[in-house]
Amino acid sequence: MRFFLLATLFIVCIGMNAAVAQTNMRGWHLKDKEADGYRGISLEKAYELLISKHRRSKSIIVAVIDSGIDTLHEDLKTILWNNPREIPGNGIDDDHNGYVDDVHGWNFLGGKDGRNVIDDSKEDARIYFQYKRLYQNVTGNDFMTSSNKNQYAEWKRAAQSIEAGIMPPATIENLQAAFVKLQQADSILRDRLKLVNFTGSQLDSVQVTGSEVASAKAYYLGLTKANHSLNTSDQDFMRGFENFINAQKKSAANLNEEPLPVRVQLTGDNEDDIMDKYYGNNDIMTSDGFHGTHVAGIIAADRTNHIGMEGVADNVMIMMLRAVPNGDEHDKDIALAIRYAADNGAKIINMSFGKGFSPHKEWIDEAVQYAIKHDVLFVQAAGNDNNNIDTTYNFPNPLYKNGQQANNWITVGASGDEALGGIKAGFSNYGKQRVDVFAPGVQIYSSVPGGNKYMDEQGTSMASPVVAGLAALLRSYYPTLTAAKTKYVIEQSAVRPQGFDLGRYCRTGGIVNAYQAVLLAEKIVHK
Image 1 (cartoon, rainbow, N blue to C red):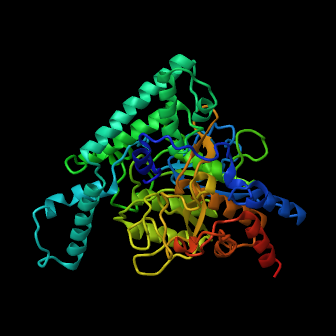
Image 2 (cartoon, rainbow, N blue to C red):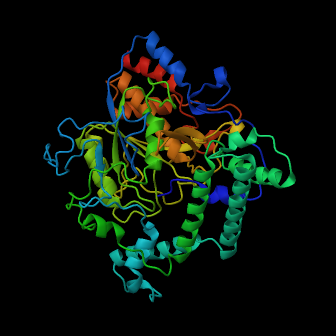
Image 3 (cartoon, helix red, strand yellow):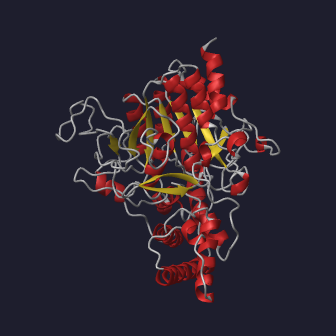
């Protein structure tokens, strides 16, 4: 699960004091270049056009396959999908679909006893240890069958992936030292300035005296500005930094420590049998719903309550399918989540996750084909490794194992703004064939769990729901648009930025634009 770009940012930012040109850009991703000065998606212009055309929306279901969601959040509780065939909390499978009390979706990472998988292993480590005894002493593969040769090649690639992902011990030590210095700076600022749960933006406006306090302020702001995290509380920022360091330490142990079968132990699922479907529980909130809550808010946070922030689409029901842990998702969970979404009326599926290995890709391919028959549009994050995914492994993807391709699929790279370091986000994956469009994915303000909070985050994980929200808006106001037509409208209306050749990085060369998309939808529907 490559959710965030912390690896790049925390290494780059150590010792930096560079300022971001603009710090007050909350909601910039929805704005208009001409009217507001930012390269957003011109959302308000789109709604004004819809009003002028007397268009009315029809509610649409968007499935979010992710880590979970804060079902009590002030900006999300009104837009949750409610299973019309299920009676909440009665402990009965009222709709006879095999999932008890699946009111707002389902948790494929849960046990019937209420426990949940939070941390899981990486897929490369799972593959490496699964076949280590078979292949660790193999020096040639001439004696192998065709099937074994493919298996051996994947095992070798997994070993190389683990090795490539391990930071040198000295780098991890430097990160640990930087974290200690960050803690010291935070302690000084809290003590001397009497700040409690402050953000970088709040600190930036505080006048300080004394070299120790000034140094602490400069160091803290250097890190938060480099990470575009000025609106993140100090405690949350430090927690993210510490989690990143711990993840690097864990990666360094992957070659020597076999991953624990946490998922199997908690869910009781036979993960090698795709027909063993009815595991999990209905707890879609859990304790690790940060990412899913942020993604859901970008798509459809309540646009009528005038609090917090606004989502892209105004008449959406979010179906949460928890299938992505802190680690890599399992192909079986993703395949079953896709089928669940299709069976329960979702017309768009957002997938803000990815990995470099897919041992049961055929299960996902079959689920995708099934969903496409139900007129579902897939929207997927391209990933945050600054890789060309035309030539590197990136799963899931629309290319089936048999060589054919899923048409109802949009792969999204992350764009930024000149005030945020450039039009193409430096972390974003790209590909002239495999990435279809770009969408805002830098310093995106959205909902997070725990007491109606909001925070800036970034990644293609944030760009994908911008496109999913746009797709929902189009299919809501133009219900005759099929998934294929919606994809066509989004891609053909994407705006090519002047002075920057985005065509080097994606198939359309454009950034999605809601206003232009509505203009094109009007023409298509009236034909």
